[in-house]
Length: 211
Image 1 (cartoon, rainbow, N blue to C red):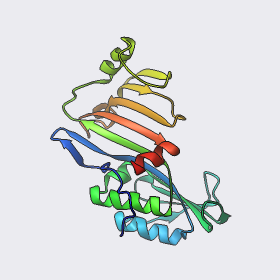
Image 2: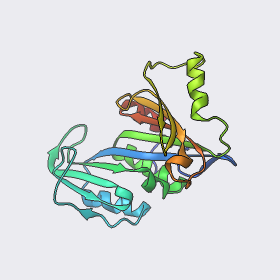
Image 3: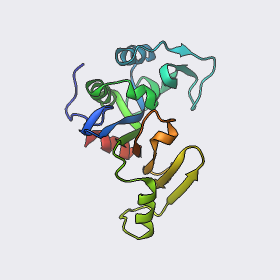
């Protein structure tokens, strides 16, 4: 697959910042125009051999949908034609488990495909700190000491029984939101790390892929 100009950033699952730090894409959502849904399924099967099962109902305002591995979903409505490109519109959501099945080269190729044929609407980047250098409580305490620099006034510190502690900066509807939490507690010990997760939406997601 040929990549367009402007190579996507090093944000693919399994990329190593150091021996105990790993970074990756943990959610990818995008819309494509002028591409038939069958072609989208073919492209996604090239990265992960999903058996896409079409459901009898649509969602997110689309008439049709299909579900694949790890609850990945494709939404489409053949009659819908919208700008900036003519042709059918296809919307795709790829959760973290699906994204984690790709290596760095595969994720780079997929991000390039998205930018060539459409537009991302949400990209989540995650860094797992296996050394657990900073825990969510440390982030909370830094905010309480006014040591944090941020443009948002929305901060939320949560204690959740059974899933550890989460520090959230920003809201789910913001262009960008930061979450810091104990991934070991959330994953029942599958990932023994502190997770730093940035959620970027709309223009922030586009800028992230273009940076």
